[in-house]
Image (cartoon, rainbow, N blue to C red; front, side):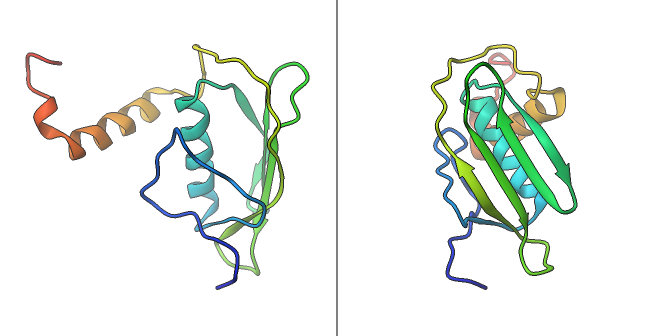
Length: 124
């Protein structure tokens, strides 16, 4: 496809490293990865713009300069990071609104598939 790196599964949501030019297979996959990263690392954020032509996400809070902007690559479903500012001296938040019921359920399903023995009736 291109000489730029492609972000692939599986990934560790706590240790995602983004770079300028990074490819994601689709807008939905990019959105999922960003939500996973911020929820797992206890940061607040918002999608400033998200539609078929762009994904722009920013850190919320005072004096933050973190943002990422991605758009489609050559009329394909793939999205490429075009702008990335990574500075964010931020604190953790424990009431992240993006940790929805469906997001939590997806995390439990991943764990259940990887470690089914850890879900015995007594441990739940």
